[in-house]
Amino acid sequence: MPMLEFLSPDSVVPSLRVRDKKHVLQELAAHAARHLTGLSERDIFETLLQRERLGSTGIGDGVAIPHGKLGQLDRLFGLVARLEKPVDFDALDGQPVDVAFLLLAPEGAGAEHLKALAQVARLLREPGMLERIRSARDATALYALLAHGPTTQAA
Image (cartoon, rainbow, N blue to C red; front, side):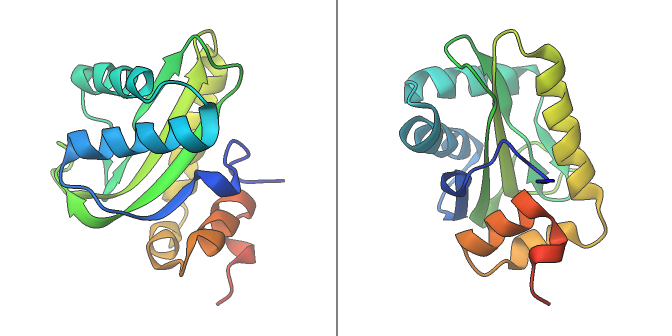
C-alpha cells in the first residue's frame, strides 16, 4: 500500500530555490497551481498565508507542513519540496526548514485532511526517514521513497 497516496510524480520538487518563508509558500503555491490542482496560484498562496498567520506550520527537525482547504478542490493534493538552502520558518524548535510538505484539501475534508497530516507526521517519525528524504538523489528516488516507503530505496 502506498505510504502517501495523495502524492504523484509531479508533486516532488527535489531542489527548491527560495529566500524566505513567504517565498517558500509562493513557490509551493505556484507549483501546485501549475502541476497539480489547476487552481489559481494566488488562491492557494492566500490560503497558505492565512493558515500560517494562525501559527507556524514548521513542526521541527527542519520540516514544515504548510496546509489549507480550498472549496474548489475535489480531492486531497500533496507536494513535497527539498529546499536548496534552509530558511527560517518560525518553527516550533527554532530550526530552519529544508523539507516542506504541502497539503491541500477540499473545504469539507475535515477528517481526510487531519488523517493526511497525521500520515505525514508518522512517516517523518520513522527512524532515518528524514535522512533518506534529504539524501534521495533526485525527484524519482524521492517520490519512490514517499509513495512506496523505505523498502524501495536502494541502500
